[in-house]
Length: 341
Image (cartoon, rainbow, N blue to C red; front, side, top):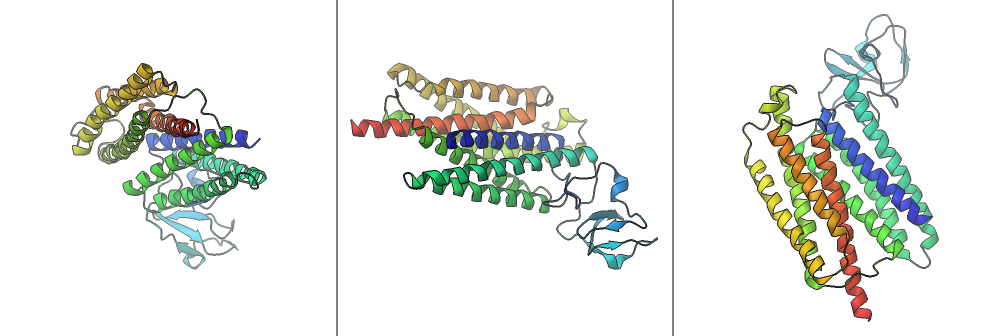
């Protein structure tokens, strides 16, 4: 039962990553300008009229309206009069972004909803881990650490909104998602206790560490390139896709060149696994994912960002990291198996 809960949690966390990628693709990051509610609602509005001042309406504390391109928050529960009364409202001070786009709002809301569901699943997993406390305290401790990290990740999401999509905070938010993925994969691995038929090899393990580190670096570099694209979108608009990378900066060239190094390291792992018959079969999936990642990268640069190429690029990188990290766990487990022989 516990293993199933870990798998469900892992799948849901990956779905949150997918949802986050769609948010970035559609430019919906500020679709909900407040947190954890959305324009002061648990279920966001669908029309701008809901965010305009309305006479003789009952407002609840925290509800949001837009007045003169500024977010106003109800200071308390009250019923409005015929005219807008400033004393009933407080100006939202986290930022000055006050644009309502219903499509962006609902894309961001679905992303938050997915995050809440994933957090609930991780919480259930943590409660189920209590049964393992007597024999395997590590599982229980790490399961509850997952809950804390999910809460921290939610807080990071709030700071991303408050900063109006600060590139640095987006990068930290993405890296933290991968940390949570790694922790859940570790819990799944130690709960299954499967490392059979794997032949230990120290050089493979060390090269695997390098491969995981390179993927993390590449993800961070990719977020920097994404920052450039976001800036170009704001400047040129969504219709000028052919110009988004017309004048790439140094980060783009580093990111593109570094992908060659990532490929070389992982091909070396594949070759070593085949030559020495180490039985690490997931390395085949790693190579496939790297080639798909390269293809989506080429498509974005040479074919003007085809539909869904951006979120696919991010999601593939996240799945690639997951496979590599699990391979790393298997390589360490095989090493421990060797010591006990």
